[in-house]
Figure 1 (cartoon, rainbow, N blue to C red):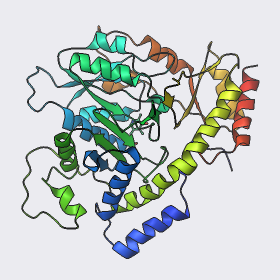
Figure 2: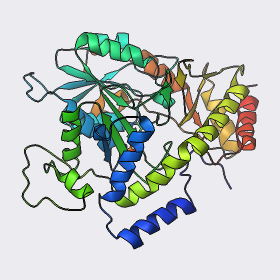
Figure 3: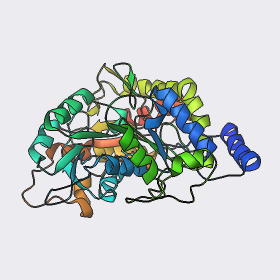
Length: 382
Ligand SMILES: *Cc1c(COP(=O)(O)O)cnc(C)c1O
């Protein structure tokens, strides 16, 4: 089998769970299974169930969180703005837009690819109400400093933790503390629901707003559907979407959640440790920096190829049919998110973009696979 950059690790147990929903329940929309998944994620994270709102994608979860946390009476001249690192999936930026806000692209730190708070400070305007750190390559780098930065400036924090399900900071799970933390359960993330997402919002009122907004903002509809009934005389007072997670998706997610700690976390960490051992000390290759305070469950394996040697590496990997990725083309280089004339430049993001290569990583890989990739890389960089 050719090597895959990433893949869904699903099998009989997930198929059986979907079969059970179809044949035993027959109700495929948001219902008992979705409720059970939310309760199990809440228990896993150690948070109150009322703070947990599942959604049909990570992008939807981010949109719901931005929407729920944005100030209710906005008096600014323009739209409410959110600081976002440029080096992220377009999802982070699109979610901010979808929630009626404006993303402000920020530069990143050259050694981690996470938001540079000094640069963010430079881009701060009175319209900024939130900062969205992205746990790039599952790294919750300087998360305390992000909250500190936000607290001192009266900003909210909406974590894009799409890569970081299962990660911990100082022994606390990502998603167990903060303002709002959003996960993705798309096909290749640390766990999957097929597609899927979830936000944890640590304010009861805001979490309720998000829970309603995912069902067209029909008030109280989530509680009704979890109880297996419908609200026939509801009110709607704000914008909402069809962003809910179905019973079918949740059934897959429940099996995946049970596999996370015994299976996926050890596998991802073992493979990443092997990559680290093999790549450390290789000339012109550098791994991203991590903090000993953080327990990282890597979603992607990123390596920086220094001194302009990325093309040589790309050719060597391609010659052996080893797939590689680039996470990500910076958002400020995308047409929709181009900076305005006079905005500060993005030197670290652009430098990193020239260096970044993503190597295969998923729990289906063997140590031999990783050694094969590392041999090719070592050969190219000799
Ligand atoms: C995957 C991802 C998302 C969006 O999640 P989807 O479930 O794919 O919508 C957002 N941000 C980052 C950094 C991601 O990798």
